Amino acid sequence: MSEQRYKLHPISALVDFVKGLKDLIIPVLILFFANGFNVKMNPGDGSFWTNLIPLGILLLVILIGLINGIIKWWTYVYWFEENELRVEYGLLVKKKRYIPFDRIQSFNYKEGIFHRVFGLVQVMVETAGGTNGKPEVILTAITKDAANQIERVTRKRNVDEREPELQDDAPLSVEEVPKSSRVIHKMNTKELIILATTSSSMGVVIAGVGAVLSQFAEYIPFDWIFEEVSHFIKFGFILVILASVVSLLFTWVVAVIITFINYYDFTVIEENERLTVTRGLLEKKRVTIPLNRIQAIKIVENPLRQIFGFAAVAVESASGGFGGEEKKITIFPLIRKKHLYGPLQDLFPQLEWQQTLTKPPKKAKPFFYRIDFIWLIPAIALCSYFWFPYGMLSVLIFIPVILIGLWQFKTTGFAINGNQLTICYRIFSRVTFVVEKKRIQAMERRQTYFQKRKEIATVQVTVMSGLTGASAKVSNLESKDAVVVTDWFEKSTLNQ
Image 1 (cartoon, rainbow, N blue to C red):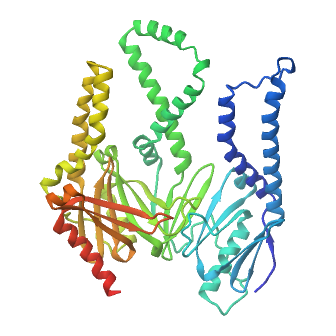
Image 2 (cartoon, rainbow, N blue to C red; image 1 turned 90 degrees about the horizontal axis):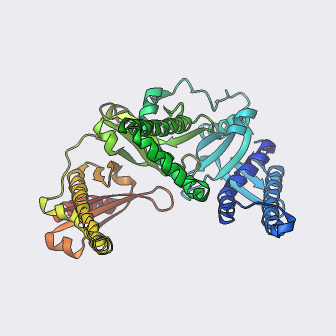
Image 3 (tube, helix red, strand yellow; image 1 turned 120 degrees about the vertical axis):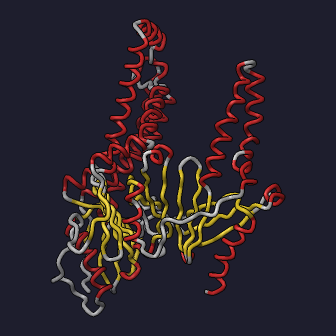
């Protein structure tokens, strides 16, 4: 096999530099906030040297980041040798990484703003057993032809080990969908709007505006605003309602724009026992998930979506996600519940998606909410003491806590079907966790002193997904039902 060495595109130096600047944003903002945004440079008042030193340090750090990006690009090379993808970089300390072709599971791609301008792509190489939350290799910026070559060489070797040279292979574009593939799901504009409306994006926008306002509080004329609002209210209740609606509409529009940018052209494709998920407008991302690396499937229904019959589906994967740190990969951000089971059955024909659940006994109801009393009672007592008599109204918080606990009790349950375990639970969103026996890394059955008295128990399962794994818990089952679940799993381990 050819040992020709390849370099990254020069724009990778700029990409790494900008990435370093993004990491500096929070420290710089903290520095400015701590200094009260005081950047005056008047030598006469003694502030010149005080402000010059931190600014000089900041400029030095930026310069070092730029030099580091240039050095990494200058020294970074990759090549193919002895059925391995080999990478080497570093000036004073040389770093080398050799990856056998048969260990490569998938290639994930990103196209940021700089990539799109120059027709480049970032390639992240995922390997079997790579569970440290990061790709094995990241090629910051290479041409799409070079990305095609890497995928072509490694795949060809896995298909036919007798042919070392691959010049005659047809290129596999990182943008085009191969003819042999099939589209499982593609989001339209209407679904993107519903996704933005029913997601937490609006809350994020409101929280972000609140955080910015809190930092500029000393510059905001609250007295003047309060006076103007008071005059405004005098004009009538209708105008107040109208202003509130306009504010909510603005928040909604911003949330829709954010969602549209992140999930633009969201498409799920199945090809050769792999799922390929693409999304993004400004930064286009593509992640490939081998079906045999999927550890569990989660169907998530937040309360608002549940009312209107929508759900989201994510998979816990032993491969990397977007950026290598996102182990839970969303394959259906929004889909109608009645349309959900068909695509899932096509992708995972060995699984059963609609089952009758074994529920916790009625005697377990208090266990879903009374643990909250431990912190509620002291909090209510303090509120009642310091803000008497109005603080005594805090006792009303018991009502929603008990209602949420009963809601969780009604949702909780499990089902066993052959080698499949299905767990349903709720914190606020209803989660259906589906896993095969062979994917379970650990199972735990536990009882507190009070659970033991009532003969109930909790079972928790864990699958491989990242450093800590992903888990699901079915709480406060009848003890004999909990034993059924653990015995089902223990028999499989004994037979192996």
